[in-house]
Image (cartoon, rainbow, N blue to C red):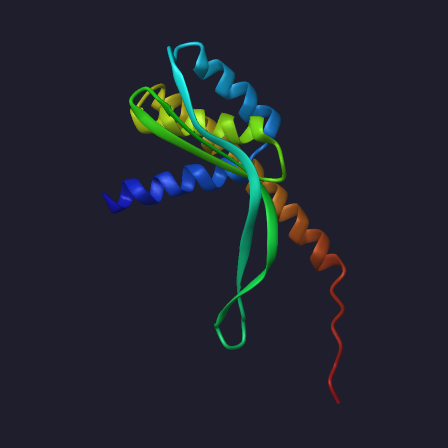
Length: 142
């Protein structure tokens, strides 16, 4: 059960950082086989951004972040999606993918899509870290 929960957390976290256009297109493909989608919640709002002090290890709130949030019911499952910003379509697309994943609908296709999104995110993160490293200055302390 814990493995399933960690996999579910990975799917949602990956989709939250994934490419919006690709996520919307993929969700549209899944919707072709889904009869009914009930929208429970679809809204924008502010959430607190938690951070951890690297010296003392204490948690604090850095500030508020605007997010789009969607909660749906489809295929007998509840799906949830959240993205930073105000793109409610992207949040709804994530919720559709989540409900389909939980229902086992097109599971191998969804897993392959999520893996491709995770690879793209990792490549983007790697490129960003290379750019940051290029600006690092090493100074000697006297």
